[in-house]
Image (cartoon, rainbow, N blue to C red):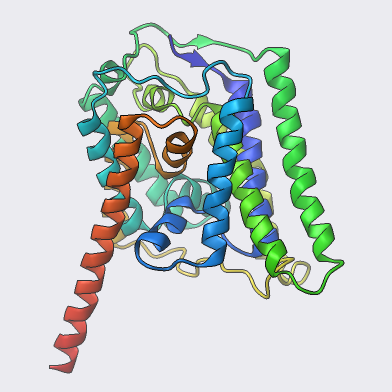
Length: 342
């Protein structure tokens, strides 16, 4: 039976928002998981990417052993095939690379910037995801019973852990900021901030249950009896923190002139133009999300925390999709250059 867990989702969302806002304020960079992975695939292996992804992996391992929510990860049935997961991963990889973002980069950080591109992309992948999950009968494939989602409030241990997690996020990121003000070189601290934001984001994903494909597919199946709105509370909680954090940076430039550990903020400049790549990317990303119930961050965390064939196939196919898009993009640029020279 699917459980509707608004309180857990909201608290976990606050953790995700804190990690995203904290990373921006400390390092000046947007927390975008698909962007970090795309950099690896396409040859941009920088130290901050390594630190951030290691943080996600370390957080996944720690969360899998400490989050008090029973089994933190799904045991997927045989009806949820490796082929289905791989097809979803390939589409998500292509879509994220084309649209330059995913549920973290566009869904949380982009919407927190009030970016028109991110709003459009989010609406597209939500609609496409619901269509794909419904038309492919994702709920049945994931073994979701046709029973209404049961409203469930967290026990004292789960709620206490969520409060501890949120407090730890604030203390850790604030502590790093405080240390940075006392030292001259911020290179190591910047990597520590990347690692911390990745680890906190992983904990938040596990705590909310978003690493479970069944929970995501239940959200993306509005016509199914087990429709679960928990994910909406996750996104809402994340934006409660990320929105004021990002808007303060954008609108109060005379107050916050630079991030704590870098010389300048690295925010996307093209926030309002809508192009074909963005639209196609949103549709493909949503289709893959609906087929598999996974997007880059939760899939990577699940692959480390509880590796099963479906999740591993998804991650491999997702990375392949990003690589394919990079090859096509490089070929297209080369073709345009040759045409211009000719």
